[in-house]
Image 1 (tube, one colour):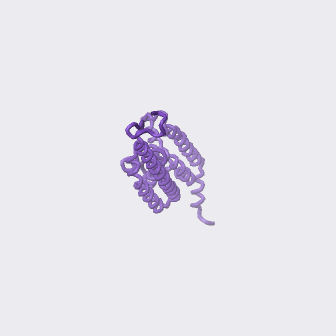
Image 2 (cartoon, rainbow, N blue to C red; image 1 turned 90 degrees about the vertical axis):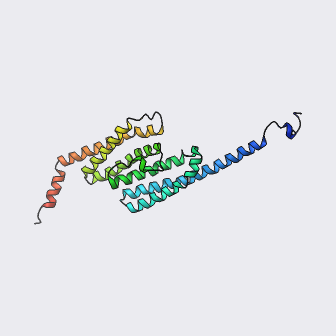
Length: 220
């Protein structure tokens, strides 16, 4: 009868073992999720530290930090590949940070944008997000070069961002996180163009020539 405290096994209206399985699977998922979140923070932190090292031209330390970041990220790959829903969020953000650092490293060493195929553990959207974040670091790098009146390097930075802008115009990002990041790219390009313009004004005003003349003048 419905009013009995516990129905006989042959009359059970639900499968308790099924709910036991669901609880076990959700518990395992939560444990995996916590592991991914915690370890992803380490990847992201190491990548941020590598970017800082690169701005300071400490390439050896940056390489060590990025090698460790990769190893740490690779330790999570079996988890996120086994449960693809864990790829987004913390792990995806960490991989974008890693991609950004690797792209910046390659640019400073080789003077060009590293292709996505060279970053094997990075997915397409993570690479695209990393490129956009890299443009922000390139802007900070360009400020340093503008302060040193390095117009040639500043122009190369501007040209690369302009080329990246041209490529991104061909995507349809709709209303995604990439779209929001992409919207900031035009401001980076404008900043670089303004720096070039201001530096050219300084050159045309004779500031560089006057300094060179003063340095070349013989001692009295």
